[in-house]
Length: 103
Image (cartoon, rainbow, N blue to C red):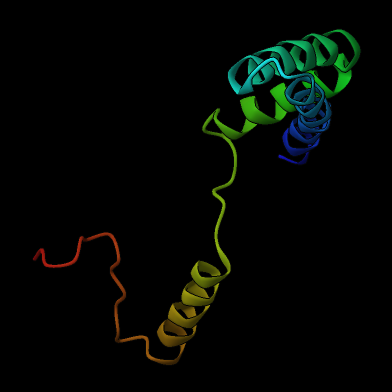
């Protein structure tokens, strides 16, 4: 995922100065966005192949179904609390596979 963020940042760093330049030249906001987008795409496509390939590999791995799920800090804390509860009280069962309100 870091490779994707790095490549996105490279594209953004290319886009922003080009956008400002075209906006300063007075081509209009829409054309400034289009021109800056096309030029930043072409530059990143031609000169940043290694970073693009790494970003593609990271996205492929993330969406392949083999990647570990991303858990928030709250989810990790909840899981630790549930594990501690089950360890201290083996007669209590935690069943979070059911949706709230269903039997």
